[in-house]
Length: 280
Image 1 (cartoon, helix red, strand yellow):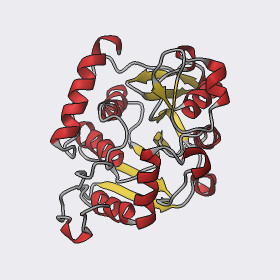
Image 2 (cartoon, rainbow, N blue to C red):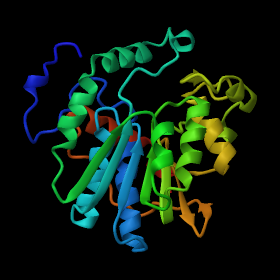
Image 3 (cartoon, one colour):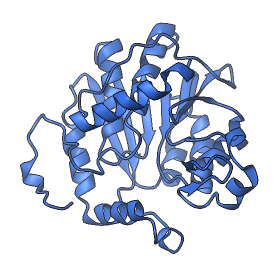
Image 4 (cartoon, one colour):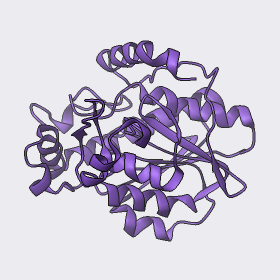
């Protein structure tokens, strides 16, 4: 990371000031916190356990933790899975600036070190653990029905998204939630044939809408679930007696993550203002 020294981290204070520390649209973190509100309101699950596949700097992990703080007295558990190593196919993505920046950051290992710092800022009442490795090598060893929330935000190309979803479904307990990031557009929104042709690319422009999106996420989510609940690119489905159902976050309180800097809060506020009338 340019002009960054690991020694400058302040104990107890999360670090998210690097320009690439929050990669997804910040507004989606509002709905992550909203999922914890939804589970707390339903009162179907007494001990909320969260697993995320793809952690990066830990921004999403801290947003899940804020949900636990707001609605469950800072009690629950968070498990993070990430290899924290370069993963893009550079033959396919060599001309994408954000890919090259991510690869460079991962090669340095500083992303992992900052994650360790950030996750250690959470209260002791939230049990945390992490597994450093590829999800396909880890998920198979985890116990079925052991998580209230599984959040998928790793490699966005089709095969990896589909495998992460399929390998995670058995891990979700009844009335739990499977969810993910970067469903910018659902299959009904886009040129379906073009999406399938390009589903092994990370990010493309849709000729039908002229909007940028992740075709691998769009195609994989549709193949498994069809249309899903979605808010600003964050998608989710609830497990109810071995079926997967859409659900609503209507009336959820709007809470901005405490660990966001002013820039990320401003982006989230602006984005939410643009989409709020179409969400619920």
